[in-house]
Amino acid sequence: MFSSVLIANRGEIALRVARTCRELGIRVIMVYSTADRDSPALRLADERVHIGPPAAARSYRYAPAILEAARRTGAEAVHPGYGFLSEDPDFARACRAHGITFIGPPAEVIARLGDKAQAREAAVEAGLPVLPGSIRTLGDGADARRAADEIGYPVIIKAVAGGGGRGMTVVHDARDLARAYAQARADAVALFGDGRVYVEKYLETARHVEVQVLADGHGKVLDLGARDCSAQRRRQKLIEESPAPGLPDDLVGRMCEAAVRGARATGYVGAGTFEFLVGDEHEFYFMEVNSRIQVEHPVTEMVTGVDLVREQLAVAAGHRLGLGPDDVVPRGAAIECRINVEDPERGFLPTPGLVAEFVPPGGPFTRVDTHAVPGLRVPSDYDPLLAKVVVWDAHRDGAIARMDRALEELRVAGPGVRTTAGFLREVLGHPLFRAAKHTTGLVESMLTP
Image 1: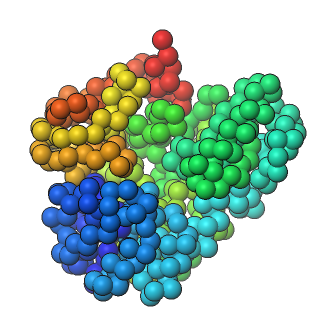
Image 2: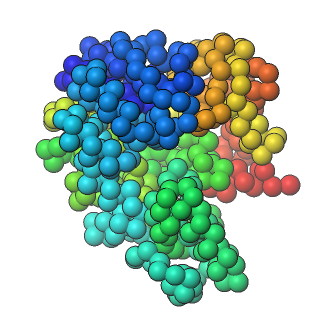
């Protein structure tokens, strides 16, 4: 195992990775920006390195500063967490060039799966079902029109370099295509520095289901079951749960088999997630791969008892997976709610500021992943995620009741600070959610007058 790991991230995920490292006796090195100089996450670090000003482009996304910190501290490996540089193939290559282990898939795999058009081609090669759409990126508006006419409306235009729910534009009518195509390309350039897009059939009502995989560098690939993340707003996930409720076991089994097949075919190594859309007739389609640990990994940990970060570290160090299918037997049901500092009553506007009061929920089978403490100043420079509340129960109904109690118990207060906790309780109480008949359109329907 590694003797030292640099965590190239911040907030709750930096704290999460640090805890497993400390349990394994690994020296923890954390980097931080000026905005995070007082972050409680730094308390778990053996060594801390300031890497720049608040702007992520000049700190957490600035690879030279991360690499220099690793060199100065003698870090053997870098754990990128999620976001920032976690799916940047150039950063993974740079780590390799400097003799530092990147805790994630090989750079070549990240590059292929991070390009949505190439990932789609890889899925087709591996025999995974995909939505009707353009096989390659679109050359111009005429290409987009021909593809959309062939597929049939509605369609969705996707940025090749997109991710995190961004870079997608839905078009319901041919008359809107030219404008939407131009806007989608402009948005892709602005968000990702890459204007390439492609088009797919858009499912109006669908379930969003993802499969957690682990793969070592010796050819072994294992799935750890499925998660449902259909409760989302503007394709940003709000609530995740495992197992995926209300779906036939054979359907979930086929998705898990497809994820393992896809991971094996692409040479995947490490922890990753294959994401699928499930239609009304229980047909499923490959959507994308997240080549990193995900925000919602705790729900899988709660039902399987597997520490995914520990497995990431072991695989990156060259070890074989010590788990087999018989070791991964999901039990009960787990739910995760993302607590963002946003105001649902003002269109989910971020509300950064001073957290004067923070009281996390407790009780049996209740986990809170957070870096928040009273007195924390939440900066406006980063994602508004403040905490993840995760609960487990033997049955889904019990897990929903436990989560509702936990969210009621959660206290977050400060001048102007608002959170999504109250709105998430409304989602949990919605009849469609309780009956496991909700789709990706549930939250938007709740917000529509």
